[in-house]
Image 1: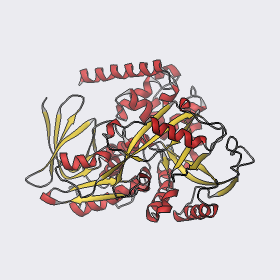
Image 2: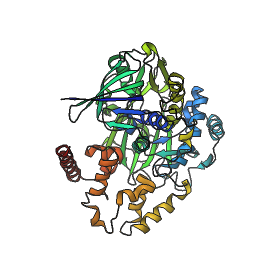
Image 3: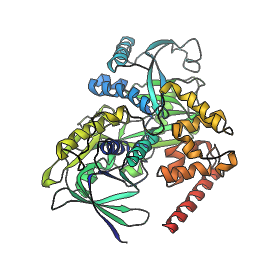
Image 4: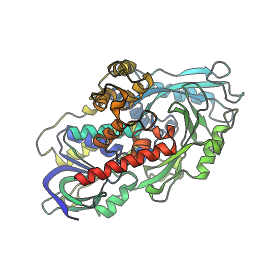
Length: 516
């Protein structure tokens, strides 16, 4: 195992390829900062693939008086919809009113604030819903008569990470997936010497950087203390959030937000055409984030809570898939995990002429604003990029992410355009590909004239051509990366189909290693 040493001095070395790390990388390189990013696993494969997939202000955060956080998040919903209209789409949420829960006047007040706090322009506002008539209330308990409907947005969470990473790389950043940072040491001339290990080959890469950005999420404390040996003042509070997926509970396109008597809320969201996503839980998690999994207690809790609102109960046997992640919240001393702040805290240590910025907390909705805040600290420490170039702050909110170069209302027009160009695609296939790749779908489909030109169809429309595209352009390395991170197509495939994809991926990786 030989070291690969680089004499190149980067402005930034970012540790962590989740949404915060990739968001900072995109913003930084766009402003002229030379940037190196390493991720020990799949890009966005941990917390950033385990969210509830929502861009939302956080209605319940109003109860904790976190108005700045809610306002920032509400504004970001439409900002992200505009720059990524392929992976972001609006959703309507229905909040049934139930006796014994928050009073109706309080809900109306909260939704009024929610409607007006964030400068909503495109999303429709709040409305009352009669649950006794029409399809929305069908299947709910008979005593649920009144509901309140409001807007938030859905996002393909892992794809948001990937698009930020792609844009960063295309602007000049060095992105290293499956490279664990094993050491970060102050350099005698200032800045850092950073060593990363390729987990596939065992080879080390050594680079220098003027500043380290610790965006390791649940591992942020470990990176600061062990890798950089710079113990932070703040610390991560690991909060587990688990989700279950069941066959769809209703036929309409609304999401429900249910209140529980323990103060928690749970969403039911139409998911992948044939399913309903239910989540999430909130509980402290003391273990290794790599080992997190939905517990039987959490699964039962979610089933029981949702069953309390529907005529037909949801049982554990209905669950077809579960996923769980660790939210790296900032530890603000709250006694209950659900009350811990979702705001972010950025801590800078400039000792030994080797500045390090550690990121604590945050949520996917506000990742771009977190990156802008991080850039303010970076600018303060480094003053300017080595090359002297500098873009104005805020550019990431007006520049489309890859594939998002169209207006939000034009999504279906893009679908028809793709189907017209590739006549062998069904309308649903074209819609999925635009949802994944936007205007870059033709980059994946290439010169294909017929379906067979795309190679083996492994099921659910996933072809060898698309798998190879994800491997070469999106850092996908395993069947898990493709089937449950980049997409959720694994839900539609049989075990034998999944095995065939895993075998194909293993063969492709072997060929790549032999040719390297």
